[in-house]
Amino acid sequence: MLKLKTKIAPKAPAPPLVPAAAAPEAPSLPDVQSALDALEAWIGRNGLKGYDPYDALESPILRALSLGAKWPRIAFTQALRRLPVNLRPLLLVRKTLNPKGLGLLLAGTVRRGRTTGGERYAEAARSLAELLLTLRAPGHQGACWGYPFPWQSRAFYLPRGTPTVVNTAFVAHALVDVARFLKEERYFAVARSACTFVMRDLARTEEEGAFCFSYTPGDRLLVHNASLLGAGLLARVGAVTGEAELLDTARRAARWTLRRQHASGAWWYAEAPYQRWVDSFHTGFVLEALRHVIRDAGLEEAMEPLARGYRFFLDHFFEVDGEPRYYHDRKGPLDIHCPTQALVTMCELSDVAPTPRLLARVTRWLLANLKAPEGYFYFRRGRFGPNRIPYMRWGQAWAYHGLSRLEEFLAAGRSQ
Image 1: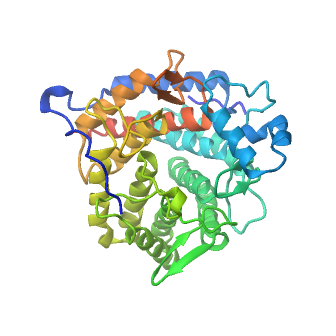
Image 2 (image 1 turned 60 degrees about the vertical axis):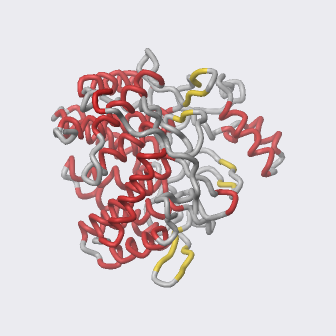
């Protein structure tokens, strides 16, 4: 139990997905449960606060050295993210409570409670939900959440706490889950308030009958997964409340991304020229959010694009042994997000194309290559081995999110 301590022309596709007898039909439920139990124990020993790959600007030393300039900020952030040795304590970077990580842990806790029937998970879920309510970003029309550190990308600089649609969507989805699990409507009310943030605080880039949500209230980036995560939240909440405005807005936002799907089935990460890459876990976010809009807002026109996008995902992001790829057209350092979001995507889209053997292979690869003997999960693995820094939000929360979704899927007997 968690204890609260505080148009693309791809290169040749990957080899065919699996010879029939190369792997068992499904991953082992006991193996998944054992990994989750060990991860829960590690988090219980270490608390909920942690470091993050992108928290370099929490260092007063690096902030001063950057002189407030964009490119030094980026250089310090990327250097600290890539180092396999954790220099954060020396640089006075503090461990923080990350709302997105807590949202992922909350969603996983609810799943484990539903799967195991353990009453202890109800207590843990309530504690996490209450903590998240205290971490809302102030000054906006609806509930929203950001990161507990400032960060700089090529697109923008975000001061500490600036809310994003990505963080808000993950947290609000978890609050919907916990409201149903605990039968406490006040958590759903906060998720509904998050829809107000999406509807009223985010900018929109409009075109006929469609639009793209901004990433934060202060930009106009055209990021597909971010816009669709907002749409998916609106659809899920709107399906409960029956609000036509939420459902129609979700459909219009989805259409903007559908119009930009490549013939191959892929989407760029974003439409700005410097953001035109295709990676695995952001593609997974797009597919999962599209599924919400189709199911909850009735966007049937998206079924064929969803199936085509999922086929691209399956054909381009995995090696024969289940090793995931970060990018669709080349191998590179393997991020913990790649296998964990893959598990979620394959479980969520099992009715579109069941993938029991691939689930088994990805699960085995994840547990063999990114799981530490102590129970936590490594950040990434490159040509020289793993980066073992135990990031809380980026590593442990995502591992818990992906494996708990797989556990629930297997326990329901849906892998056959």
